Image (cartoon, rainbow, N blue to C red; front, side, top):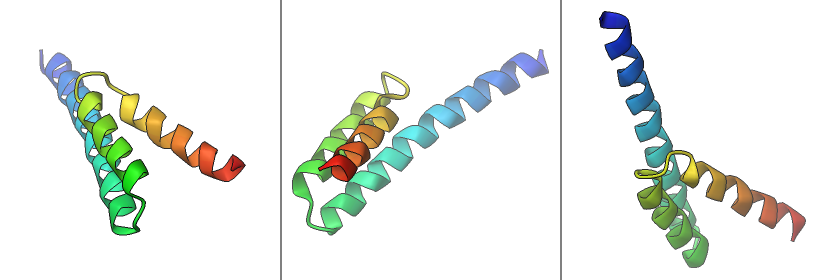
Length: 69
């Protein structure tokens, strides 16, 4: 029984970590003066709480866009 609960706890922890890191990325963008990308990342963090991985995908796509621009 303990292993099932541990896996569930780890999954929840990783899900929350993704939301938190995306929110931090958004706040950093806002402090750098990049308002649109900051708000985009904060919105993605909010959606990521329902759809795991969404915030990470938005963050990666935003970085790729900047590199290719």
